[in-house]
Length: 129
Image (cartoon, rainbow, N blue to C red):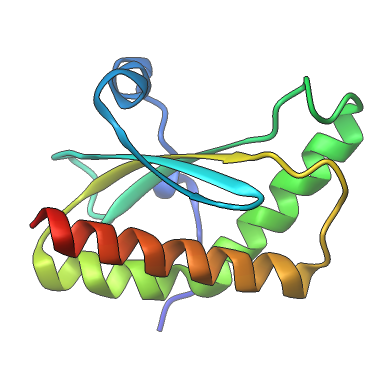
């Protein structure tokens, strides 16, 4: 199982990010809000994602950077949950993940939260399908 989370997983298209906010659906699980949109992308990955930590909640850049780094690591470890489902159902997603925690959570807590969030997303995708 490949646990890499490289550049091809990064969502860069401004047009796609804008349409995510206009047409996307959301899943919430504290401290994350996840916006997603089904899409066809040219990359060979089942999902592409943006991770955001708002400046309004976390004033210091070093806090925002740490939150994003720990979140990326949690996603890298647990992405197989979502990836396997998307490959099975032959879907591709664009995802915008917003972390709204004021205080920093431990890496174990982040792992559990990401796993829970991915499970909720899979449930929602199954109901939509």
